[in-house]
Length: 110
Image 1 (tube, rainbow, N blue to C red):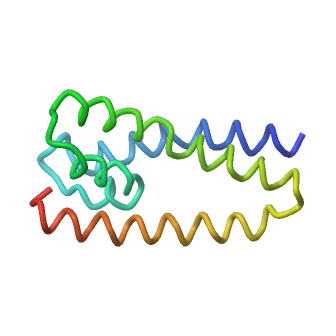
Image 2 (cartoon, rainbow, N blue to C red):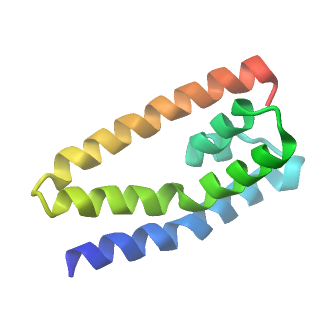
């Protein structure tokens, strides 16, 4: 039962986080800081490819699967009894991605 709660929670968080990020960025007229914090891998995909079509696909794919992937990773390691350490590692990875997102955003004016 605990695994389903983790998966469902991670799926529910995604549209809420997207809504918060879009509202705070005011559809492009505000600041992108909340999106960089909530979805750092989204920013990283913007700097990966020069191909506009590939960048667009990656952009939305990462936006939609980031938190569900966190849930899948947590569940996979919960089955091994390593939920707590996996949570800490995911937090560190996310914080590192935020740092990278801000560095890339400054370098590419994103």
